[in-house]
Amino acid sequence: MTIPAYLDSADLFVACGSRETAVQAAAYRELWHYLYRVALHVASQQPDQEALAQDCAQRALLRIHQQRETCEEPKAFRSWSRRIVTNLVIDELRRRQRLQPLESTSETTLNTFHQQSISLEGCVLAEISLADLRQMLLQSPMSGRSQRVVIGRYLDDVDDESLAETESNLAQQEVLPSHIQVTRSKNIAKLKKWDALREALTT
Image 1 (cartoon, rainbow, N blue to C red):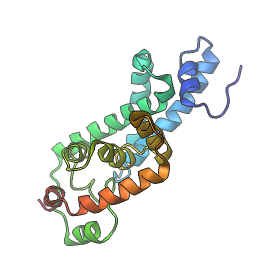
Image 2: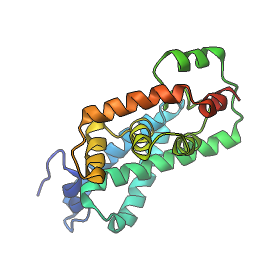
Image 3: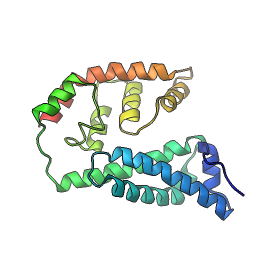
Image 4: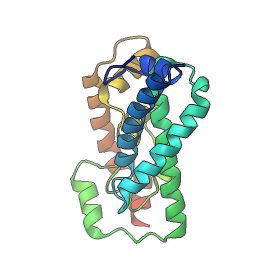
């Protein structure tokens, strides 16, 4: 038996639990490639990003295999898996930052931060660990929805369609991807003026 080249979350969840060895192996191969792409994105500023992404994707795959039954919503299996690999990469980046002192932010970086749209996964990564940045954003003056939209897009690499689907479910009314884009744009502008984040980048 063969499986399609791409499975949606629910079908991938089922295939990963299949008793047919070939089906399960194919499903986990597809999942590994997905996890690798997510990890590579989060680790994009690291000199060994490919090796780090491969290692975290492999560890995530093992954890997912062991904890698959704890995923309560098969339709969100990819999102659930993405959080696992993202957290593994973040933990590794945080460990590295504990071992290596950070350099102070350059004036160029600050000008880029103020003059251009924020690249939270880019210019900030060298100054603040992703875990610390996530915690800061959760304490920011943004609404819960705004926090989910900004963190989801910039830290968890969630596309606008998925974010819109999540917010639609939470609000019990339709939220379009265009609404997500407007929310993100407005809050990025606010964050550029948020003193706590500016201070974090200059210390």
